[in-house]
Image 1: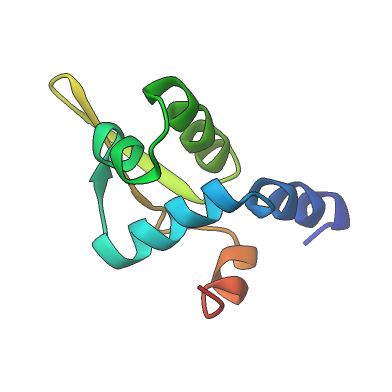
Image 2: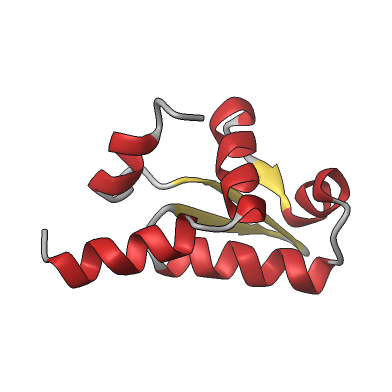
Length: 88
């Protein structure tokens, strides 16, 4: 893994809201955007922004079902996640 890729991945995880999202999804396997927003007490816009960052970094994958979008931990999540997953 290149250092620049590792740095980018760690920057995405260096936020308590995003760490909370990853931790929740690890426990619950899959959640809709609205449910995540409710638990975090964030607006849908802010929650979607955090989820998008995690998805672009490869930590999450999403599935659209009708009007709802559901997120889960990506099967091919970066090694960074796998190494840190024991921490939370």
